[in-house]
Length: 267
Image 1: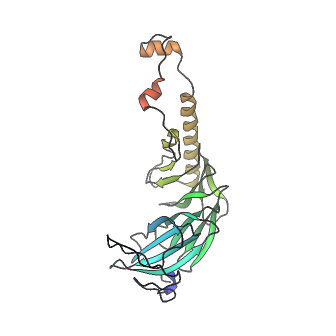
Image 2 (image 1 turned 45 degrees about the horizontal axis):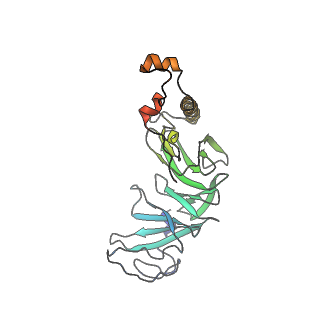
Image 3 (image 1 turned 90 degrees about the horizontal axis):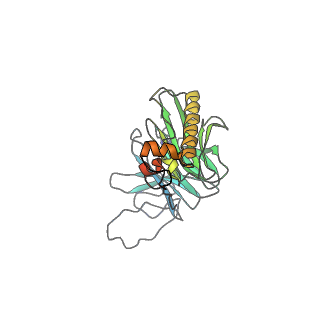
């Protein structure tokens, strides 16, 4: 089955035109000659993602505060054709594609994440948090695949889209505002310096679900140890022997001197 079930558009919406299933938007002053997508959302756009290179053609998905995620085909001229849309019951905060480009994953303020099958134009819930979900990523490895979600409930969760319960939950020290996935690691970003530590370390292609759980647990233990170290000062005698200072002198612990002042993100 072809992408979108062979559909060529909705409501007569075409490249550059004003009509379509999403409604119309009047032209405005455009000194940079940007090309506006046909039928944009009715509220602020919160996230964008282009389709992966494996997918023939170019497609763009956008999530918005209008509670919807929309998909356009982007032509070589830059003109766009509305293809399909799906809804949540709250604003969309993040979107991502599967590696083969057949599915789009969406994260929402309604505390759920969905998997949108573009072939059938059907969406199903694949994740649940206790607070809005701020980030979502598809993870593809040689011997496993999963969906990673980060929420404002201070949790990073890993999901098999075929089951309702998470494979693994990693508790974070603060709310997750964004995250990213690399070949060797997953990095959650939260407003605390400790969160800059690597959350995962694993060998390419050698990570099973059981190994993932072990690595995440080890990372959490490492974070707790470092947090405990930073919460206390070295023994005065150790400082005298190692640093060559008098015990009565007040200096910052060596780990804060080496790492610099502890700073917190404003957002």
